[in-house]
Length: 156
Image 1 (tube, helix red, strand yellow):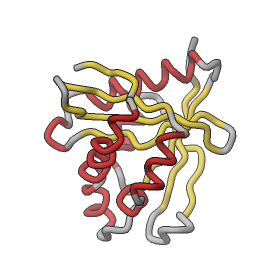
Image 2: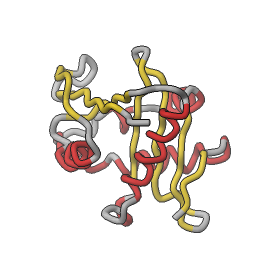
Image 3: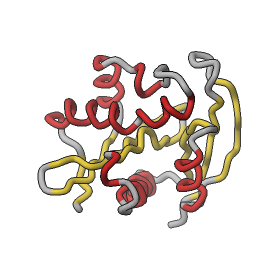
Image 4: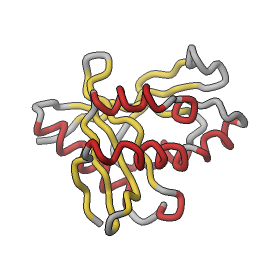
């Protein structure tokens, strides 16, 4: 597996990966209307242009990705995703490690991410990696979704 910076030519495959990776959230919440699945391609492309995205590849196939961008004046890890058939192989942990390295290299001492409260597998991963819940609120756009802000202090 290789973790590399995404290129502009990856945008279509990343959009497809997002659709596949977040289907389980739709099942968890009992609705197809979760943020990652409701996002249209133009909005995805705009968000991607404002982000630094890393992909994990097996050969030519993208099997995982994560993005970093500024959100509310802090570095934010978003849209960590792994193809369903490759989960449990360390891809998400490797991507998180690379994202955190990038954030440290940019001179930041902490990072945040936002996760749905019912996404317990994701939360367990983040907690194992040292993230702590610091805020909880109902999503204004998705009233059935409770969101958690999780933060981590990054060491040198």
